[in-house]
Structure formats: structure tokens, C-alpha cells
Picture 1 (tube, rainbow over the protein chains, first blue to last red):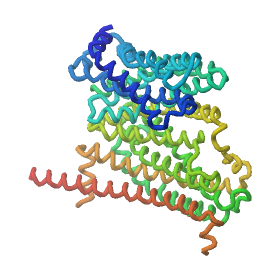
Picture 2 (picture 1 turned 135 degrees about the vertical axis):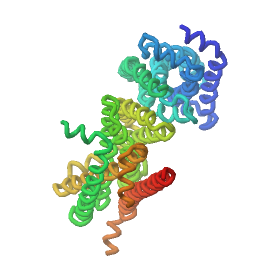
Picture 3 (picture 1 turned 30 degrees about the horizontal axis):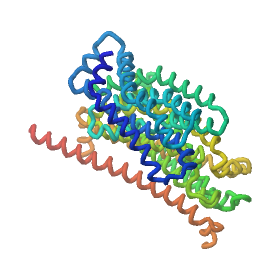
Picture 4 (picture 1 turned 180 degrees about the vertical axis):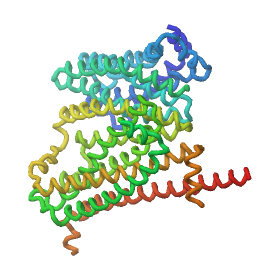
Length: 213
Length: 249
Length: 55
């Protein structure tokens, strides 16, 4: 809870992430031209790639403030397991940087000519996928804590690990559009989310110990 | 077992590694010469692909090594995490550049093979795409390691990254494969599978010899590199000083 | 000989593959060896300097 209130204090961060997301998505039609059919086909992929990039933005902030003011060292000594504390931080990160993207996505989908079903599917995949981004990203953030050029490094480490989420997320929307049904994709995304929920906080905790010692 | 733990200490491993480097380097050169001779003079021309299929003799070993080295690297990293042995994490970081090199070579030779066979330098085939992602993973590993100044932290952090990576590799591979079948209609049908079924026995042998040559090459280079890493990290210890002074006088 | 080099029209691709592979492997070996040599020299110098200081 404390993490959330702290995070909410950086309200400008939320806005920056959301606007970054919107701008990146809006750049694509300018780059490839305004053909409606092409844009419709690209929509899911574009929104998803933009979501990946946007979630990278605030990752470096995930542990950095606590690291600099020394809170992190105290957190390592608390009797509660560190992975739970990490989970709390990741949740806070998702609420300020993932959830807004989920809520914004139908609007952007409309820009690309997606309709009804596809919009809901896009939201649903983002709802399942963005927590994975925050979870996996936290490992990268913990590993690069306090390093020079940490931001670029995080994206180098984390973006390849995001690929399955991207494939299933954008794939679900495409499969739905092709009338093939996206249950398979969605259940796989759910499985990835569960796996990330179990493993990522633990790995991040281990990474934090390495970085702070 | 006690033997293993004796050599787990850098001081006793260093001279052993020196001997092994020579051994594996010689074995690798011999196998390479035989393998190359067989690749170009013994193996028959493929009836479907002509001479072009000979690229396979370097492409397939490179691709195998690129994946194999990542797994071995992750095993060393895991060993380093569990037993806190210094040597394990050094081995992991010594393997990474060679692994990245083989990954690049697999992509490069794949492109040069793809052009005459499929008519394109690059297709978004599941195998090619996974190999590209593997290259990203190697690059991330090396970038993280070189960004951290403290060697102990660098070794442990990159080791953890290798473990996270190796858990992700199967997920990435299957997702890429799924993605590839989903978009099958737009991509070129890959005929690579045809080679394997029509491979003669001599081709299989050549492939195996080339693979072992690359494997021994990797061992020799990685061990030589680990010797440098040992010297760097242990430069203050007495055995390094004694050894270097002994070599000078 | 030149016919063999042409590899039935696939010469460029084959020699491109094997050539670059050989180049990379040779360069890697040279880099590893050079790193070792310069390291041994540097450490040796450091140790001798320390020995002179203590004398």
C-alpha cells in the first residue's frame, strides 16, 4: 500500500507513460500511410509493441528511489520475505504504468479502425499481458540497479524476454479477427502470467540481494 | 568427488586448464581438417540442392553450438549460484562471447544458404527468428556483465540473467513456432527439412565431425579465456605472484 | 580448380559462409591469446614494481 501511495505521488510519471504510449501508436499511421485496411491489420501489433516500450520507461524507477535513499537496504533486513515486498512494488508499478495502458487501448484501437469484439480482445490481452511485463521487467530493473546507462541496459535485457507476451497478445487479436477463436492464446497468456507471478518476484528478490550487497 | 572439488579452486584449475587448452586445440584442429576435407571432397553433391548444401556443414554445427553453449552457460551459472564457487561463474562468462559468435555465424551462414535455396536472405522462419532472439540474449548477458564494475556482482548478476534466460528459451521457442504457423500463409514454405531426409551416411558423419571440431574449439577458447579471467580476479593472491615471478626468473 | 571454386554457381555463398566463419574463429583465437599475453605482462610488471618498492 505504501508503495502505491508513494507511486501516486509521482502522478506526472503516469501521464508521461500514457502519452508516450499514445504518441508511439500515433506515429505508425504517419509512417506507413493512412490505408484503413493495412492499419486494421497492424493495430494489435502496433499497440502491443508500444505497450512494451511504454512499460520499459518507468522500469528503472521501480527500485531506484528506494535504492538511493537507503530504504532498500532496510527492506532486505525486514522479516517478511523480500519476494513479497517485490510483488507489492511490482503491483504498484503495474497500477501506475500498466493499467492506464489497458484503459487507453480501446481508444487507440478505434483510431486504427478496430471494432467491438476486437477492442474487447485487445483490452483483455493487455490486461493479462501487462502484469507479465511489470513482473519480468522487475528482474531487469533489479539487476541493473545503480548502473550507469541503466535505462538502455534494462531494455536490452528485458525486451527479448517480452517476446512471448507480444506474440500471444497480438496473436490473440489477430486470431480473433480471423474468426479462429482466441481461447488458446488467452489461456497460454494466463499460464505465462501465473508462471511469472511465481518465479519473477523470487528472481527479482535474488537480483536485489546481488545488487545491494 | 574429492577430485572435482580440488579442481574447483582457481589455483589448482589454472595449470590443469592450460594443459587442457593445448589438448583440445590440437584435437579441434585435427577434426577441422578432416571435417573440411570431407565437407568439400568426400561428401557427394546433393541431388536437390547441388553444391549449395555444403553450407550445412558449418551452419548446422554453429546453430547447435549456439544453443548448447547457452545451456552449458546457464548450468555453470546455476552451479555458481548454488555452491558459490568462483570458478563456475568465470566459466559462464568465458563461454558467452564464443556462444554469441556461433549464434552470429549461424545467422550469417543461414542467410547465405537461404539466398540460393529460398531466394531470400532472410525469412521469418521459426528457427531463424529464435536464433536471432538467442543472439539478443547473449548480447544482454555480455552487456550486463561489462556494465558492472565489481567483478563479483557482475558474475552473480549475469549468472542470474542467464538462468532467467534459459527458463525463457523454451517459452520463446514455442511461442515463435506458434506465431510462425499462425502466419504460415504469408511466409515462404521452408524446405530445409528436405535435406535431413535425403542425407547420406557420409554427410551425417561429416556433420558430426564438424560439430565435434566446433565443440572442442569452444572448450579450448573458453578454457583459455577462463585462465585470463582467473588471473585478473586473483591477481592479488600469492599463487599468481609466485607463478609469474617463477616464469620471469 | 576454378570450376571447383565456383561450386556449381554457389561459390559466393559457400565461400562467404566458410570464409567468414574461419575469419571469426581465427580472430577470436588471436583476441584471446593477445588478452592473455598482455595480462601476463601487466601483472608481471606490477609484481616486479612492488618487489622493487619493498626492497
